[in-house]
Length: 130
Image (cartoon, rainbow, N blue to C red):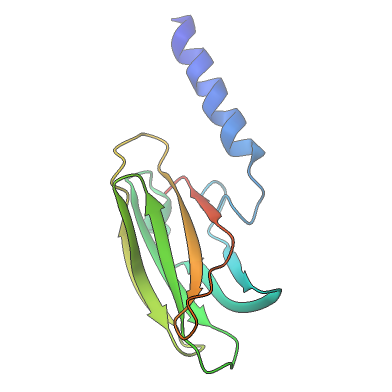
């Protein structure tokens, strides 16, 4: 019986260690600003309360917030998949669905923003607990 308690404690430690901007689904969905070259070029945000049910499905929206002539895309990095899940060219944004393919019970993945005109990438951001 001690092993499950240790596992739960370890999971709580990992989640609690994430900053509020990263842990979108731990408390409530939050926005993540996508920065490239020191400028905020887009915003990624959860779009549904179903996002945080722990079923491995994330409902998001990417919005282009910088008028530079380029659209902003959101790319997810999962061990078995790297792909673009949404692209936006305006502040209205684009809604998308990401399904975790890892099959773990934590449901976490890294994503990056990308400018479509130049291919420039943002740092990786962590999405947890969906």
